[in-house]
View 1 (cartoon, rainbow, N blue to C red):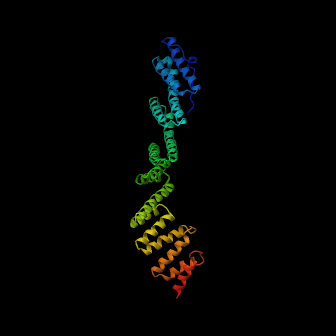
View 2 (cartoon, rainbow, N blue to C red):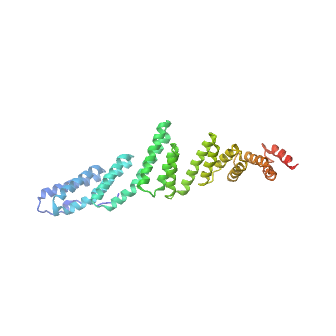
View 3 (tube, rainbow, N blue to C red):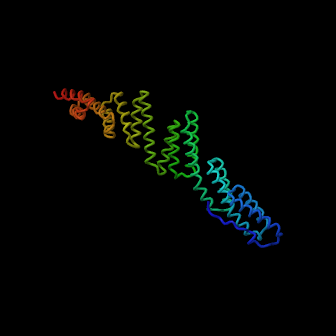
Length: 322
């Protein structure tokens, strides 16, 4: 919170046309507010400073210094009240107080407090979302977890609305929506994140979304849809597993050349994968099936010394050379 000066008004205020007792009463209320701030009770301090301000405004010129001090102090203390609630993780209550502090700062024309609120609000909403996400991930009950994810998503959505340059908020929104099973909404959020400075991270997430779609389509024997989803995934990044799915789907569609293409891309992207030799054997067999002896030999020879596939590969090599 911005520093502000708490002035003991009695030392600087002179008597005016109003009675000294009336001015003294307003000053005493102000000084009680000072004591409350010093004691760490910003809520009580805010109420006292507002009372002092109201009283001072009725006194005219003789209370000008008191009123000026109150107008400086009140927005800052109102903001401090909101911050105190954030420290206690009382996010919903703090957001109400942030709004109240904003209205006070607007009324009293305190630009510094308004700017600080503008900066802090997205941060508080992100913190709220992070806490809700952490709680959701600890929950074993599926329905409770989903509700927790959606609650976290609502906070991230508010954070992004408050600061459209906050790509991380949109990225987190997409992630929780994806985890909750809302793929279309997650895709929109990731695209927003990409446009707000998170293109690389969002691209990977979009690629993964399409991979999930492709895997589900393959499982449900919707082979053409699986390949189409992989092609969309490829637009956002290289994912070896996506190529594996597309290769398997293409085989089911009896599209030998496409299967070869995707399995070869898989091997290029993941040359040390545990199943690399198995896929190499598959590619060799597909080339053989397509009548391309040269390429079939090339791929069989790559695994001729493999413990599991070597013997069969050598048999194929011998047969192809006859």
